[in-house]
Image (cartoon, rainbow, N blue to C red; front, top):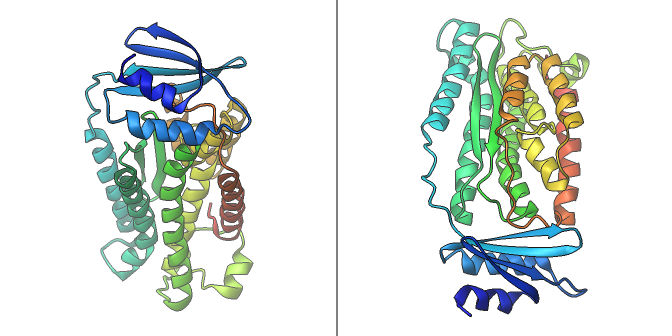
Amino acid sequence: MDEIENLVYKYFIVKDEFHIENGYEFEVIDHDSFDFKKTFTNFYNVIKETNYIPKLEKHGSNYVLQVVKKSSVTPKNSFYRVLFLIASFGSIIMDGYFRFGSYSEYMLAYEAPILAMLVLHESSKYIISYLKKEKHLNSYSIPGIPGIIPFMGFITTGTDSTINRDSLFDEAFYPYLAALLGVIAFLIFSLRINISFSKQLTKPFLNGFLNGIFNNKNLFLEGSTVGITILFINFLPATSVDGGFLISSLEKSSLVLDLISIIIMSFLGYFLFALAVIFVQNVHKIELLDSVSPLSKGRKIVYVISFVIITILFIMFGSL
């Protein structure tokens, strides 16, 4: 019995064992006091230092653990991700230029919340990846249409073997949370600093509310309403956006949820973004190494609270 088999027997109760191409397959036993999530995570942290990778699945009433050699796949080129990121920065800056005609404090105040949202989302993703020592989600920032929409949002084409649903949730949620907190900070900031423009650029749903509390021609507020709208769209349960990954950690995404999300996106004027979501559905792929363990209760609560918060913010400040 070699090192891999010894490790499996150390962490799991094995009912049967098979030799397969490039590795092993074990039928493991569940029992009342056994915690698959914790055990598999501990096992993964040990075995990832070897040339093998584990995968836990449920086949009917049986739990099957595969341990196979890592494939020697060439790392994906990040050129296109960087290109899309640069294009997104460009579309935000050009949008401000088209609206104001020149570089000014008006242009900067309007663009600041949107740029902050983009920077915080993307930088958080890399920071989390570095801290967890794992590959991040394969996502692309989608540039907007200057003069109409400064920035579309984020499209994710798949994952690189995320450990479990908790890990998938964290990878999608924390960059989103960082971007949301950044936009909320500018929203609060707009109460204290007023850089007004001669006309209102966006059309918030609750104009009466804004007139009573905010100056709805304040450009910090204008940019924040665009940011909140983009974040609301990205929280929708469409397959390839942040919300789609969060819902996938709760249950499998569905065609109905995709359709509802695409209709909402199109209604809000993000028709091209909806097309991008449809286009990448064929290449979208979520691979969980542990597909048995459910999402933790704490994260389920966080999901519900986050959905309520972004929906309320969108109803109050979202723009058409």
